[in-house]
Image (tube, rainbow, N blue to C red; front, side, top):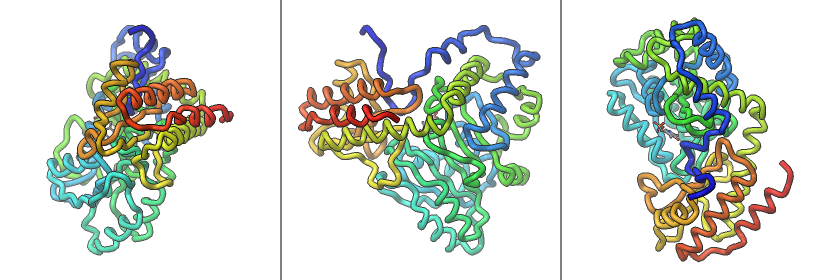
Length: 386
Ligand SMILES: *Cc1c(COP(=O)(O)O)cnc(C)c1O
């Protein structure tokens, strides 16, 4: 097909041309002086994106690796951790915690709401012996388009005076939705390269609080590749304990430059604006946004419920076949019930207009009864200057 493919899944996202070009440079000696300069640069430039002045470590791994790193560096076999069933990714993270030998308290959820801060407070209030060692929260649940309120969750932990660590997955929110590692008192922030950071898959991150560093001294889960200590020691000199993903780091340097140039507040406002226009289109079509709480709508993606008799995967197949656009599938419990529109990363008003036009035409071709005013309503939103 001619023209560009529309990669409108909520990650991996479209990679800007300048990032692709940056990565095409020759690979260099990862123990040489030129590399150390690059390493120091990206390790420092990452910090403001996390909202931290503390260390951020970079793994040559997908986000799943950084989940594991957060757990094995801070916890010991049999430790209790509190997790919440916000959707597919929260479910996978708690399965990992269980398989690593942690005792998971998994609070059930309906996949339409984020973590309820009141339930956090209640669970911690009941834990008078402080046996819960960590609270794990997925900030933006990519399977549902629901964003949990981390500042309120932090306040809930503090209100109980509970010492549990707060571990937060920002894989699909970092660089798209307002996030503040230090201000919100997060202990480990987990992130990945292929969503809001506009890079290909292959890098993941842990931002680490002082309290998490302290916990790592006594944490007894087995760890080697993921161990923060050798990583932090090598990072002091801008290098890594094993071969880093050199060319992805070239890309990271450029992606961080792009985010800095636009300015994070403007980046967040852009995502929120596109998310709002998308929801307006969905409502005008007469369809339902999966997220059930006004305060928790995701800026990164919108999950759309289809009528009971419709197979959402059929709609996605038509959109791919006719318009060369990939939309996100329903995951786990939501397979066939929803499709997900990614509006994060390297994205502008006309990318959204094209995306929504493709969705509307695909829905019509699939025989889904919709009101065709959706696209017009979205364009009206986009005509208003940001
Ligand atoms: C994508 C995603 C993951 C999984 O990351 P991988 O890079 O596929 O390992 C985990 N959590 C969230 C919230 C995600 O969006």
